[in-house]
Every structure is written in structure tokens, then in C-alpha cells.
Length: 91
Image (cartoon, rainbow, N blue to C red; front, side, top):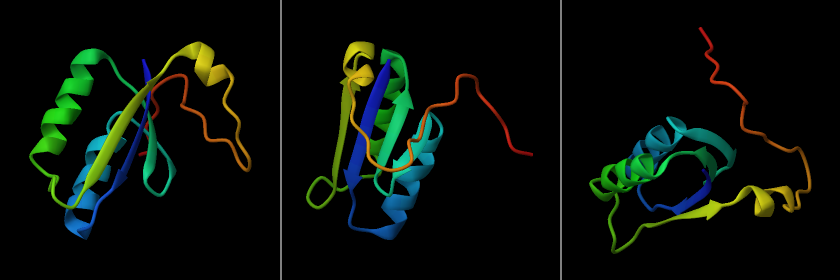
């Protein structure tokens, strides 16, 4: 399933660690927004991983599931960043 993940994280180190986790499952579309393609088990894995990093007194993180129907109705202005159809690697 497709998810939109966004964050507002105060400390550079925690923010970098969060980006590292999110990049495993998706692509960055804006400075603090990712589009993720994950299954329910992976959502739990992300939650657990970020739960050990984030400070719930100062940091904010949200993931919102987006169904195909809703995704097809999205509105974008500017360059559109799409999720690659197949995994790809840069060597």
C-alpha cells in the first residue's frame, strides 16, 4: 500500500536517522515528505524503528495511507516525483 510520511524533527541527528529509515521504503518528494510503498508489517517495523529515535516532546511524525483511487485524484504543481515501478540500484 502507498503511504505519505511527513515529519518535523528538531535535531539534525534524529532527522538524518529518520531519513535513513524512510529511504529504505520510498522516495523523498519534499524536504520532509516521503512516498512509501509498504505492507502492514513494514509499517509496524517503521513505527518501531522511529519510536527508538524520535523525541515525542519535540518531534512530530505522521504516516497516512493513500488508496489507489485517492492517489489517482492527487493534484500536483511542479515536477512530479513518482515511485519507480521496480526496485532500482545505483552502483
